Image (cartoon, rainbow over all chains, first blue to last red; front, side, top):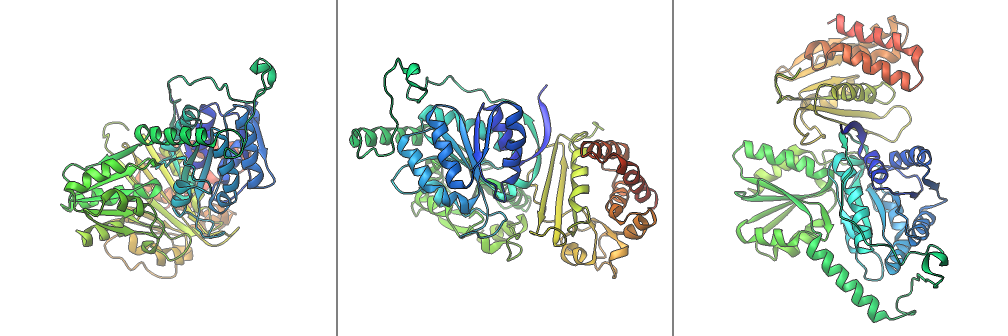
Length: 356
Length: 184
């Protein structure tokens, strides 16, 4: 029988990491992801796995880099302002093509912003730091999905030898939901013959992982390999879910915890006879561009709901190619003009009505 | 349990930090998991150690919970005047309002809801601990709604307090729960 537990969205990521056989966690406390680092501090040592509370986020991302270079499944978790602090390390990881997981439980910004939820890191997560690399971004909308996508993240990381960002948010992290703890099964993965496991593991041949692809070795080979990898991921790994989309006149686009509120608003609008539908991107990169582009042929209105001043809306605009009207429900539509204010279904419903 | 497999209900609980708002919300959620397939508990609070507004919403359902973030609750349990001022308007028409009479100085404005006053703080004081006023309110809510049988809540309460190594608080908490349940 599958175990069913009541856990927070943050803990669900911790369980996902355990079920995915992640063996190394490095992190530094920050709200609103503290339930996750606490969970790891408690559970990882019990299982004989490695937990390190680093002296800073800069240290923890570099520890992840070192661990991932040996081929183990490694991860860290943090929140917005400290995700910013990790960018140099993440760019380094990209240059070394190291598979690992970085969890960002978004809080308000810019700077230290607020300790509460937001969705203000969409662009930094999908557009990345210096160096033109790309990374897979997964965005769960429930504790159950946080548990499952964490497992998927490790699989995709190993499959493509790439780092993956799991983009959660403070609301999702701190809410508790019933979760079925069921291991997700994936196809077999190739051997990590590139991992630095001591010369004996490589028939005493020297191995080398470095962060300067334009200085050491062939920059052309690196770029060609990366380009092919990114194209393949874009082609094969886009994930999304649609709700009541077939006959919809107005298409809502929303991800993460905000998609829950939006889904409720959509059903309420249907109850009033308004033909609303929802598309929920699960991968933010690659963005489900094709499906939105196709919808734009027949649908005339898109309403993007995200708790920021408009970030994902840029991807929707690119996908729609000017073929339909687009409007935003954003942070200015929160019920309270404070850090703890949030977008409620009532507000989304009002916007649907007026946009219709 | 089990005959009607399409149940969904929600409750919002509001007060200030230290009153046990989140605690009874979690208790409903944990106990709810025994008879509902899907449960969610959603908290908001300000960054204070004590004081500051606190709110939580619980959804119990036989189907997947659409949104844990409740904007218009069916039932509202308020611990103090300010919570009533903030959340009274959000309650759905014909909803249930359980309020702490001891800390609310006015009558509810809404005439389209069922308002139930409970002298929770005073009753808790009479039992010797103002801290259990949250369980008095919970008892009253359970009696009126019958959402979860009280014995399941009691078992969950026992289990939770044992796990937190607070065994000696079990009898007082159960007494407060019973008190709210019986005084309605």
